[in-house]
Amino acid sequence: MAGRAGLSHIAVTDHDTLDGLLALTGRTGAGPALIPGIEFSTDLPGCEVHILGYHFDPADHELSRQISVLARDRLDRAERMVAKLAKLGYPVSYERVLALAGDASAVGRPHVAAALVEKGHFPDVAAAFAVVIGRDKPGYVPHYKLKPGDVVALIKGAGGLAVLAHPGLVGDDAVVRAMLTLGMDGIEVYHPGHDRAATAKYLAMAAEYGLAVTGGSDFHGIPGRFPETLGEFTVPAYLALRLARPVQA
Image (tube, rainbow, N blue to C red; front, side, top):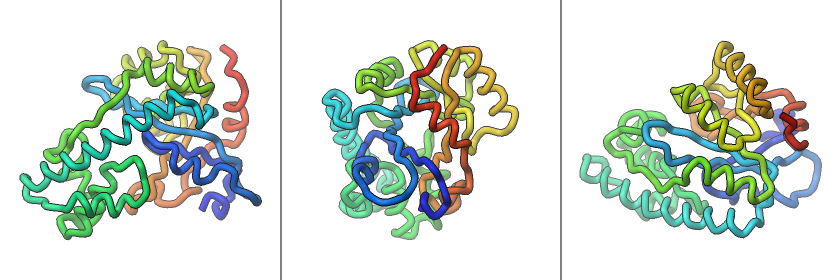
């Protein structure tokens, strides 16, 4: 899909898993350059703060160990979410959720949402999130998260670059600034959730803190969620080229 869209680079930044990245590593033939990536949710009361990792060693032992811990918790979380949904009047089978997840190690809410849609409880995945399994909705179940500083250390320990994801979605620039003091290498300035004012603000913040500027489409492949296809939202290729070099403050 990325090749058909004419993209020069693609970063696979799945939450808490390297499965997608590893499936593409070592491929042959023409196509977009592959940037190693991952995304972590962090444990911060009152805020949803995500941290991206780029250009790390996918075989790093500690990174792999933490991902295994998160994968096991995601399975437990999905089971608890299914039980909660049944009590709310939206019964789905845990086994069906796992079947829809296929061989994915990071079972998540999109798989639960797909089961809800298949069962006829909601017309689409977006509706399932909006009504029952989105953050703070009645069927939501939190999952185990690392502390922000620990995530930064984990990424750097694997030889990677830590980047604050979509700061405009955090909802509090004081929190954003606090995150940038934890040893971040970059900040995701270009994002579908950022308007022009937000983009300009975070560009200035990147310059203020001496951080790399990054961007991403946050493509999830979910119908009704922009962007619905790769190539609808892009960032300049030079940002990807700069990211591969050491960040100079």
